[in-house]
Length: 268
Length: 345
Image 1 (spheres, rainbow over the protein chains, first blue to last red):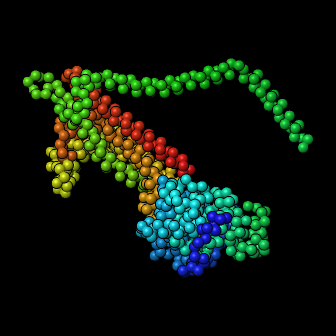
Image 2: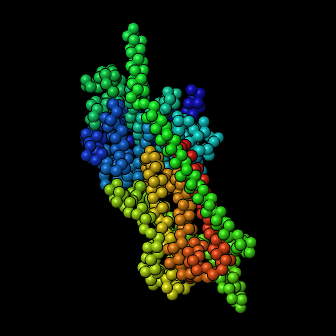
Image 3: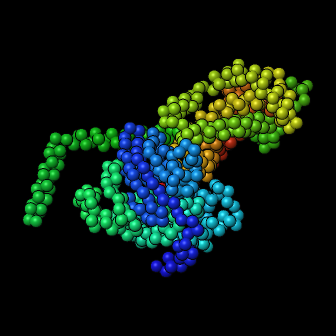
């Protein structure tokens, strides 16, 4: 992967400030009357990748959408419980939801670059909202694209439409767009489910670089992916957290029978 | 494995048997009737479509033919000359001379006022209904806004005379005049409240539901993942709407505006009721004026000369060309928008 090597010019590890950890406490989430997340306690340790696995409809996407308060944007959706960013409860009425979302970025299931916007404008969209302009903006965009491993592929065509990129490039563009806001936590909701294996591999390699700077949660239905990228893995079933622990343990010596059945492919 | 070919064979024979069965019970007559039905359907629907096309051609032909005497007498100058004098007595200067300058001006200005009011309001309604209101409230307000489109224009015109005119005359016009009177377009309030401004406001009521309904659908069709993508970057609602929703639907909004313009350009009766039948171009929007459509509605029945009738046809031709251009423009832009949307999905 020569392209990836060339992009690794980022100062290695040594973050200026350590990323925060996230503590989910007693989280319940509803769509109308239907309860999809039924009281979850989960920690996302700082500068680690936590994978969240479980069968379709187990509430894993809903849960991480509560961590940046995006869940509440859906009509009729609400949640209860606390989500602590280090020690700050992001559901505290005194906390600004905009600030929460700037601190906790998100990458979605399908690449969602803004159409009718150039590659540059897509990455610049977030920093522009917080008033970053001119040379600082240009630098911020370049840094984000470098961190997302995309700079060398697009640096000479930043003004082209974002939709002209391939699916994998679009998803890395979306990662760059999230990074450009300089978040401390990044949530990824099945970020590779619409990508081919090569593009998937590139994003998995990225996660390893990124976690020196941010805390990462990644929802995935792909157990090999969880095994490859995650330091810790949480297994959800029917809105409840069944088991969480070091990835190695979850896949080799799970404590719960249901976890074992799931990771060995008895159901899914 | 041996079973498979046998089963396949059994299925084939069964199907053949079914077919023979159908052939026997259905009868050739049934099939012929079916075929005849399909042909008749094709013929009738094609005929209906052709009739619509023929109708447009007939209308255009009639309008062009009708306006020929006026075209050969006044030429293109008809578009900007402001004399409109149907009088036949030889003592009067410029008798039996026609020019549509006042009407073209009135048509353009009333339509511009209508769009200036209806486009921002309509987009606001579209934003509210598609993204900000609770589902239940939108289900009530949405149909009501569309119902506004079904109020006959003559009734809106009546409302313009009875309610809007006194209100404009006593409140809005003096306020605009005292604040912006130096711009000349907000001159001294007229005596009745009828005039170009009133007609523009009345037209805006007719354009509003068009803009609101189309933009609401446009905004609803912006994929949720794009809206969430903006919110996840820490955008406020308004920033999300501005950077993603309005940005990605702008050609659709332009197309909606042009459709609204087409509605405003062509309206006759409500304008006749509220514009005050003026005969000159005045700087002030509060003055009387007239539009192409309105003039045709006022004078066609009582026209005193062949040249006047022909000049009214000429007005109709100008209006027709304006409308066709607006419609084609909207279709071109909407087509571009559809392609852009295709690229998103």
